[in-house]
Image 1 (cartoon, rainbow, N blue to C red):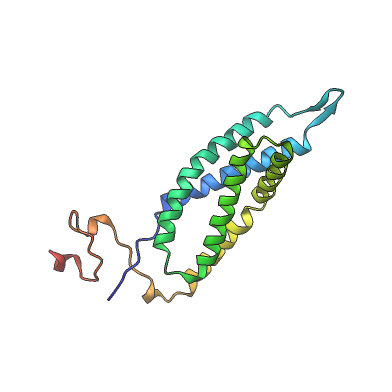
Image 2 (image 1 turned 180 degrees about the horizontal axis):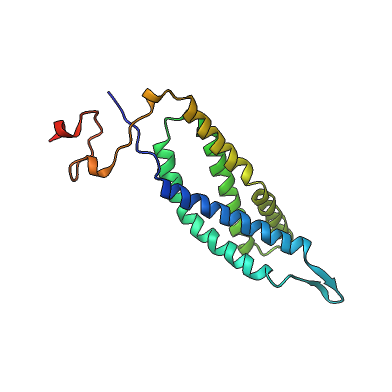
Length: 179
């Protein structure tokens, strides 16, 4: 049985996902810099930088969008790439890392205990700062795996317009032989 893999992700979906991860990481890093490096103490406590709240708002909105987009992308991407052993482990590690980040980010809103909230915030901040490590590891492993696959083994891209309407033929027959 000649089983073909699903088509690779489109460049547009990849770019949207990459831009979303970059926006999350950059807004998170900017917030950390504003919160920890630019806060000023005064006689009443700490005066926060005026841009801290808007940056956190952008980060929160991007996080909500990311829950949908990354979940959708990961489901399609994992299915399409299930045959690639080289990047499967790094993909699952990246997914687990993102799940930890999302869980810790959401938990900050619902924990009533200040100690637990501070600990979860610290986990979120550390994982967020380190996010580039699993992202770049996964991309590096994915790109290296592509270079190691001989050209003859790389499946051809299949598009919806290559098949008759409503027909999901995954055989290797040319288009003219299917009709």
